[in-house]
Length: 105
Image 1 (spheres, rainbow, N blue to C red):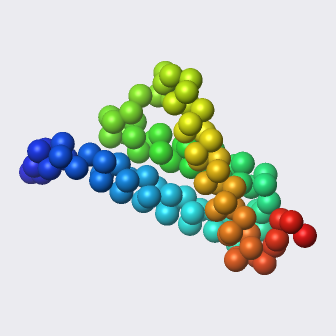
Image 2: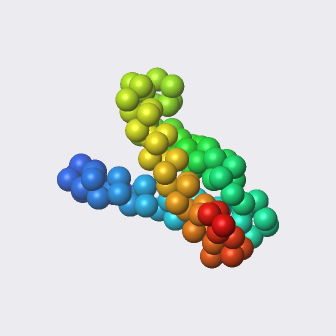
């Protein structure tokens, strides 16, 4: 059985592991989208939704989060902006590296 004192002492570390791990998994999804030709800003918008969904499924299944629409507005805005920025940067890099597409040409 896991020692809950460890989790209590290292909550920030575990939070970073969770968010970076989910980002890596979602980045793989965006790479697959690029590979199959689903590219551009619209694909990044879809990817942002996928990223939010992945986080919420894991967090709500684990019982560590409430449903997003019950959060304070400022937390919703921060979460959507953070994941949106991640999706745009990841989308541009995946489209450029996988398909050779530069959004600015």
